[in-house]
Image 1 (cartoon, rainbow, N blue to C red):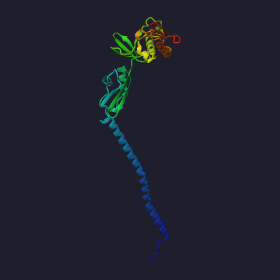
Image 2 (image 1 turned 30 degrees about the vertical axis):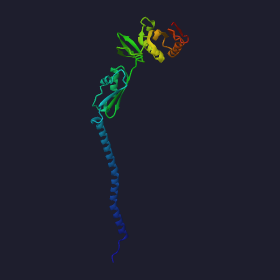
Image 3 (image 1 turned 180 degrees about the horizontal axis):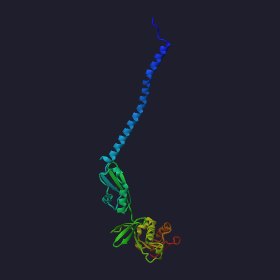
Image 4 (image 1 turned 180 degrees about the vertical axis):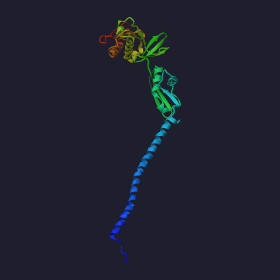
Length: 267
């Protein structure tokens, strides 16, 4: 009768079996670790492909290129004038358009433009949003008129005076105050006075005459005149003048240079 396997043999067989299974399990474990690495690589390749595709779409394809330019906000200027100066390159990639260069070109060559925003309108448009300067005073130059805006900046010369804009007369050549206040400063003072006039009085003002820093006179419709004095205390002077015009509607001359002691006279 054959003897069964001894305890040692059983133990050896068990050990041998365990040894043969070991490498297989290790390989499985190693395989599991290799899979996430492959996924990361695939994801990185996909992201790279997306980025490359996006760059090509923006710069290399015809999908996002300038095809039209539209101008908004013009009043005196025409859209055609603005667009010719803007010189936006039709056919160029929309993403690479130098909007700051376009804005600078417009402000430099068209001084009537106070500000402009160059806006991309995807996928094929460029918008030019223009804000024009508004004249508050006019200065006569030969047979033409120079428009001055609310900052005291002369910005355009026109053949015909715009309606409702007062004429500025600087007559301070013999004034001693020119030593301290030059013509540019007097211009700004005149603009300051004009800006503080109530709307109704501003509409009726035909001339702002400056003979010195302390001597500004308004010439109104119907032959009326207002001695304003300096540009100081403008809002108070404006309120006082409004009250005087209502209280003495037939007066021809008004003095608000000292607003605490105003006066009106004549007819």
